[in-house]
Image 1 (cartoon, helix red, strand yellow):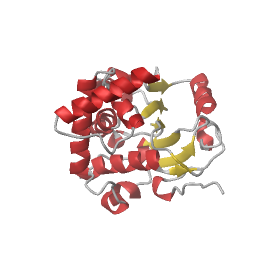
Image 2 (tube, one colour):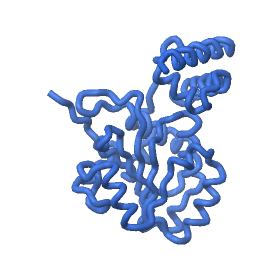
Image 3 (cartoon, helix red, strand yellow):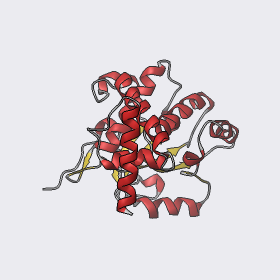
Length: 242
């Protein structure tokens, strides 16, 4: 298995060089994510990797998105970073009722990148989650028509599937109102099969219990069956081990 993996990575690096780019500063775990996302096809994975590098250089030239660049989105306090699940995955909660369609689409895209980068690279308990996946909860409780943002949802998921390959472990959608079903059908049309397979719509008590079982009550707020408090993205302070 290890030899097969090494051979695939070697072919990927060669394909990347043929495209005039380099993978010199990237570790094998990062390269494997691109391979897995493209069914281990080195040429397709190389194309995705090169496009990703160009995208990062254009949107994130400094290597990170500062809070000052996404202040309007942060001030809504609609995103929460709760810590790690039982199995060590960062847990993100989105409360859609606090969201309104963005007037500044560029800032919204930067906000999504700021969120994903912080969730995936923050040090938790003395270690950096640099090659892990995250678990998300999209909470639609109290959602009103004024909060519905199909374009924003599509943008968020497409950024994940196009530029954060194999970073999403699972996304739970909870408290979906009846009128959102048609919206979700439309949104689903723009998502690829691999992304859709990671999305779970929770509609009953058994589903809610499964969330607690998978994630753990130590990071879930009370309304999801846990015992934690909501931690807004900008308030999250990574806990360090002594």
